[in-house]
Image (cartoon, rainbow, N blue to C red):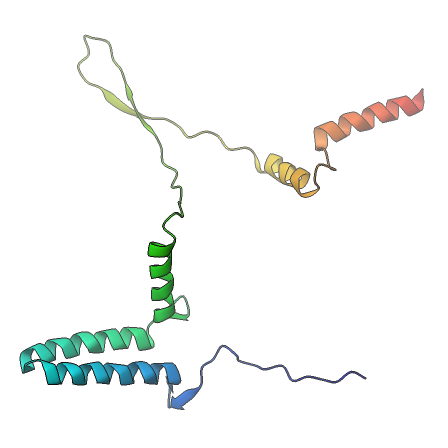
Length: 158
């Protein structure tokens, strides 16, 4: 009988240090206290209060806020990476095209007309095309397959 292995459970949950505070949150809070201490030592009291509020807000966001279930610092790193390192990614936003309709000379106004977008292929046709692509051309499509079957059936009757 093969050996049984214990599969780890809950690998996505972080280790807790004190109550609901995880190791990552504790380190972020500790670094926030460090920056607040540096601000206290290097600035006057009014500037320190302002910096302490800003630091506390940043620490709160980075330690406790989650975007789509992921910690905020992961979201921030991904956002910066996709914005600055990979700006060549293009996303097409389909829009309707505005065309000016020309009137006769005696008419003074030009009217904007919306041109209807191109009609899409029916879903049955799209699924048939995807099946042709997926099979590498072995499947020829319903119309071609029906004509081939009719030809072969008529040849057998002769």
